[in-house]
Image (cartoon, rainbow, N blue to C red):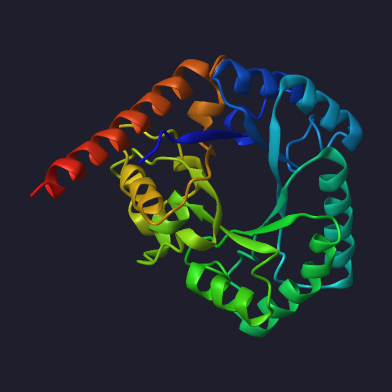
Length: 279
């Protein structure tokens, strides 16, 4: 596979302001980021105008891949429609390319009709602003949308292939136990690793999600290699939620180490495969 293209989600350094977060990305040689609307004290939650976000990103030479996220997107209500429109307006104005769409995750059962209703309503909102809707299934047992297969089928049902793409989150893919990858429909990959060998897969939660290293239980390397073999050539965006990562005064060294590990292992797998393929 080609050299991985890394991106950085603001969750990798949530205590940094936007300028500090962007500086971290550049220090790592990363040119693409995801910003969030759920981090207090920083853009977007602090009221920073989208034009200021755009200017800061352009000055740093960064592409904003997404705003993360419109929550409970598949519970479509007038309030959700207003929220989606406001976020889409902000995304377009700040120069973001997409909006991550996160499903209801409170034990509500899956509902194909509600999912299609939401996608149908979001389709013109996003299309009119030239944004991609990045649908992110969550693998928790209490999620209303666990499966990428369900998301892909609903996207096809509303004729949304030109507007929507899937987020492949390595953590949630492992939790869902879904065999299919859908690389041709994947618009973004979120990566994080779980090292704790005392927690069962069913009990894994966001605070277990650190960086990808040799002790990773999620097979990030295998997932990344399989996606690449299927044609995915987009960004691998670091999205760790573990307090141990958030508490780092300077996460650059840890992130750099994880990047080097992923590069080395994926290139090693490719070299091994080439040797295996020789007659």
